[in-house]
Amino acid sequence: MSTAEIFENGKEAFIIKPGDSDSIADYLTCLSNNDNLRKEISRRIYEKSFSYIYNKVLGEYLNLVFKCSERKMKDLSITDCKRL
Image 1: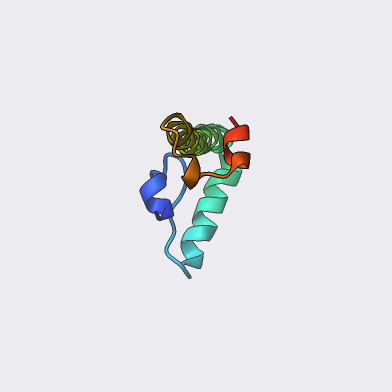
Image 2: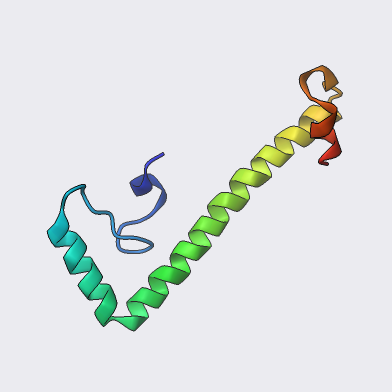
Protein backbone atom coordinates (compact mmCIF):
# COMPACT_ATOMS: atom_id res chain seq x y z
CA MET A 1 0.00 0.00 0.00
CA SER A 2 1.42 3.38 -0.97
CA THR A 3 1.42 6.56 1.07
CA ALA A 4 -1.03 8.14 -1.37
CA GLU A 5 -3.48 5.28 -0.75
CA ILE A 6 -3.39 5.82 3.01
CA PHE A 7 -3.19 9.60 3.37
CA GLU A 8 -5.22 12.27 1.63
CA ASN A 9 -3.02 14.90 0.00
CA GLY A 10 -3.35 18.23 1.78
CA LYS A 11 -5.46 16.79 4.58
CA GLU A 12 -3.10 14.47 6.46
CA ALA A 13 0.05 14.88 4.40
CA PHE A 14 1.51 16.47 1.33
CA ILE A 15 2.19 13.90 -1.37
CA ILE A 16 5.22 14.97 -3.36
CA LYS A 17 6.72 13.31 -6.41
CA PRO A 18 10.28 12.04 -5.93
CA GLY A 19 12.83 14.68 -6.84
CA ASP A 20 10.34 17.58 -6.78
CA SER A 21 12.43 19.87 -4.59
CA ASP A 22 10.36 22.94 -5.50
CA SER A 23 7.20 21.37 -4.06
CA ILE A 24 9.06 20.32 -0.92
CA ALA A 25 10.29 23.87 -0.44
CA ASP A 26 6.82 25.30 -1.07
CA TYR A 27 5.13 22.96 1.42
CA LEU A 28 7.78 23.51 4.08
CA THR A 29 7.44 27.27 3.69
CA CYS A 30 3.66 27.00 3.89
CA LEU A 31 3.85 24.87 7.05
CA SER A 32 6.46 27.09 8.71
CA ASN A 33 4.28 30.17 8.11
CA ASN A 34 0.96 28.65 9.20
CA ASP A 35 0.73 27.36 12.80
CA ASN A 36 -2.91 26.34 12.46
CA LEU A 37 -2.31 24.28 9.33
CA ARG A 38 0.72 22.60 10.89
CA LYS A 39 -1.24 21.72 14.05
CA GLU A 40 -4.26 20.49 12.08
CA ILE A 41 -2.19 18.24 9.80
CA SER A 42 -0.32 16.93 12.84
CA ARG A 43 -3.60 16.11 14.58
CA ARG A 44 -5.05 14.42 11.51
CA ILE A 45 -1.94 12.35 10.81
CA TYR A 46 -1.83 11.21 14.44
CA GLU A 47 -5.48 10.13 14.32
CA LYS A 48 -5.08 8.41 10.97
CA SER A 49 -1.91 6.56 11.94
CA PHE A 50 -3.38 5.47 15.28
CA SER A 51 -6.52 4.20 13.56
CA TYR A 52 -4.49 2.37 10.91
CA ILE A 53 -2.20 0.70 13.44
CA TYR A 54 -5.08 -0.11 15.80
CA ASN A 55 -7.13 -1.76 13.05
CA LYS A 56 -4.15 -3.75 11.78
CA VAL A 57 -3.23 -5.04 15.24
CA LEU A 58 -6.87 -5.75 16.11
CA GLY A 59 -7.31 -7.75 12.91
CA GLU A 60 -4.23 -9.84 13.63
CA TYR A 61 -5.35 -10.40 17.22
CA LEU A 62 -8.83 -11.50 16.16
CA ASN A 63 -7.37 -13.93 13.63
CA LEU A 64 -5.30 -15.47 16.40
CA VAL A 65 -8.33 -15.71 18.70
CA PHE A 66 -10.36 -17.44 15.98
CA LYS A 67 -7.58 -19.91 15.30
CA CYS A 68 -7.29 -20.77 18.98
CA SER A 69 -11.05 -20.97 19.50
CA GLU A 70 -11.39 -23.37 16.57
CA ARG A 71 -8.88 -25.61 18.31
CA LYS A 72 -6.49 -25.57 15.39
CA MET A 73 -3.63 -25.97 17.78
CA LYS A 74 -1.54 -27.76 15.18
CA ASP A 75 -1.31 -24.44 13.29
CA LEU A 76 -0.20 -22.52 16.37
CA SER A 77 2.58 -22.74 18.85
CA ILE A 78 1.74 -22.78 22.54
CA THR A 79 3.37 -19.35 22.79
CA ASP A 80 0.82 -17.89 20.34
CA CYS A 81 -2.14 -18.95 22.48
CA LYS A 82 -0.48 -17.83 25.73
CA ARG A 83 -0.45 -14.27 24.33
CA LEU A 84 -4.23 -14.27 24.63
